[in-house]
Amino acid sequence: MAQTPAAPTPGGTLEANQPVRPRRERGTRVRRRRVRAAWLFLTPMLVGLALVAGWPLARTFWFSVTDASLSSLEGANFIGLENYLVYDNGWYGILADPLWWQSVWNTLYFALVSVSLEAVLGVIVALVLNAHFRGRTLVRAAMLIPWAIPTVVSAKIWAWMLNDQFGIINHLLMTLGLIDAPLSWTADASLSMWAVIMVDVWKATPFVALLVLAALQMLPSDCYEAAKVDGIHPVRVFFRVTLPLITPALLVAVIFRALDALRVFDVIYVLTSNAASTMTMSIYARQQLVEFQDVGYGSAASTLLFMIIALVTVVYLYLGRRQLGGGS
Image (cartoon, rainbow, N blue to C red; front, side, top):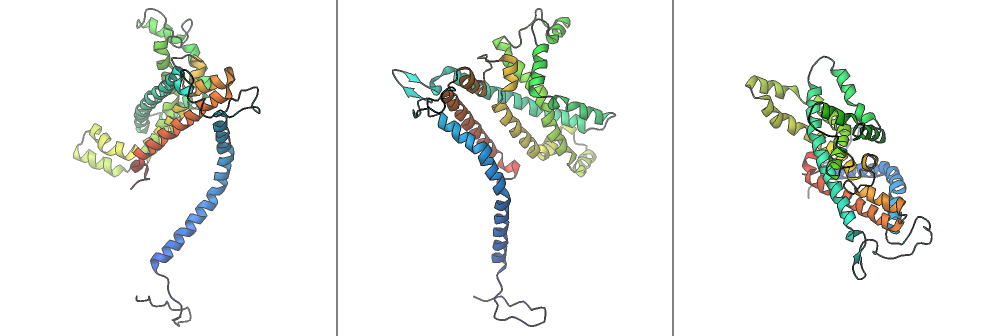
């Protein structure tokens, strides 16, 4: 194998006995140094994450295989997977509880509908705010008000507005002649889920619009000038040019909102409390842990909630890896 000629020294002489490393080897060494530096910077964050997230998660999983109660955490006994599923003249455990599966369905339904509506409305709002009109800055600032209000406060405001006795929503609908009698938005099982979805969409749509607006601000203008010269319809330009270019930012916004929607608690608990028609996995776990004081059973629900969210996140990232730049 032929050796690469030695490089000349600053004094003009050649160090013939010192071999020159191939370029691939030098690149590999630089890459290894960068990887070591990356792990060095990541280590404090990983240690902090293990302390604030890993330890509580491990403790929750341990309680899920015990008979711990809120009054006797130290005297808990190991019972295996009985909190999850056990057969004793019939199936018992959280996986045999119809209310748990109702809460799983409610959570997935709430997440799918609310995040879909927020993505569509967020793109529409971002397109409007990206246009040039008088007072655009003021409108952009006003758009963020719902997102800036704490969730519990906004949910309580909407609970008063949706009240069937003195709520302004029923008053407006009756004034316009759309309904004949007040509706129990948060007490009627057929309306309560749509009521909490409406409140969540009102609050979270500005967040999606903000991320999409930032992506729109970065788009190159030459594509739109060429489309305008060619006389292409704006709707076709949106689907062929704008939407593909803002898809990475939209996917990031959707995954953030999906994670929030899957662990939703406050907005639903303030509006409908423990109602079965809107009970989510978080509310189910809270009911077992606090009201029934069954730490073992509630920890099993929390562990399943974590596993479902992790599974949905992994599947979403796998399907969207090309748009996020993580796949080949």
